[in-house]
Length: 586
Image (tube, rainbow, N blue to C red; front, top):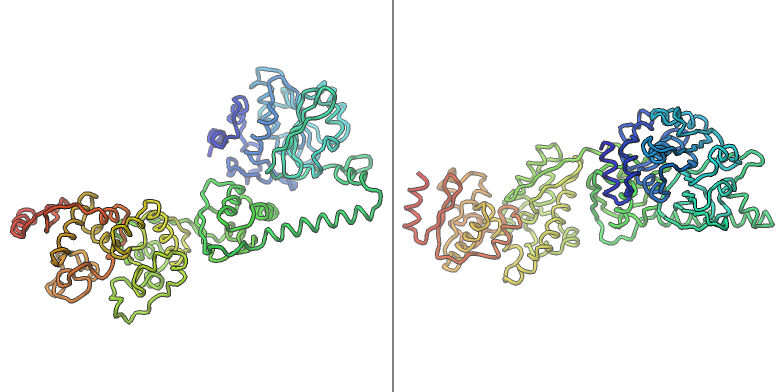
């Protein structure tokens, strides 16, 4: 994603709106404010480490704060905790109207090494030598008279680090309140919220909260006469140290208890569950998705854990399978595991058989067919009298009740919906089957096909068997409907279906390679010798074939053939069919 893309992404997210702020995002490149090893991730919408335990803020958060602040050309703005220098440079671009107006940014950073790093970055845009940005390596909560004198007061103040105090104007550093002009705004994080304090003409502050953010703490000097905001304010409210200690212990224990509860596995619910993490999701979006899908109780513990571990940017996109409820630390390990394999996208074509699906995964080196068949059952077998060991489908039937409509010892042929699937290349056959059955259930439900099959007086297994024949016999929907009508006509006349595709399913040979013995065999899939539908589905049909099976075209036809161009020719009588065979299949 380039800078233009980052701005467009934030516009699409609905956070970046004001034209002058948008222009600053397009012109001031975040990559110029990162350590070298972090630059490839410059346009990822995540906070990134810049040293000294500090981060460059998430682009979404920076855009949100600037939209709250609404900086304007010509304004004088105090930027507290400028860190990488990115936000200061964005502000400099805005207040100078891209160097057409005189505005100033006063940037303060207490950490010396970080101050030097940010100052060097800001200088890349000539904002320091031009006098637009003044940098100060010092505390931001002490006396600021020298800075304010140069500015003649601040139009706005913005802080990028969190004050762990209560949202009260008494907790705003007195120097900030003193030197902010009337009508000016202070945008600052307190806890996990952004707050906007607007100075009124009487000196009081109007405040508004915007929750849902995570920030590094504001570093404050602990030397004598310096403010240590949280504790100094708390001490003023209590008269006995024991009371304070008791309150503090109770408060901490309450937080720990809440976090421990939220980190526990969620209720068993409908596990196993599957969730797909898109490639462009931020850590917060991933956490919200996991909570929504019932994988975790709340997004906060996993975000906190990932932040502490420094793994916010290590989340891997892909599809994850959770067989049972897990603790938050296990979920976090699962989605950030550096051993996670690459994503494999596999297109399962309409009409693919279990053998064909297994072969595709074998070709990609994922697993061998024998492992797949342990889950699906052995394709092509006569399940009525087979000595093959039949998989235990009880867990799958619990998740997908429609499977109970198939004969108890039948395979899953017909139930694995063709589509494009994405998996990690260490996926198990069980996970593949689960995802394909989930897709089958979702798509058929959405299309109303379960209900329609019931209304047609068919069992699901019969409908899928018929649809699988159509899938293997024709390409176009209307041809499938006509062939469905021909099958219906033959069944009514008690005629054998004489469909080569069902024999090809068990023999593995093409239509022209079928032998006399094949055609005379007593296989339950031989529709030349056995009347009615074959024993079960001969492939996995797509939605169109299932719809065609339920909506046969009424005609007088009893025969059909396909020429070398896959055009299908229909006939009412055998003599007509024989003539067309001579004509179209020389």
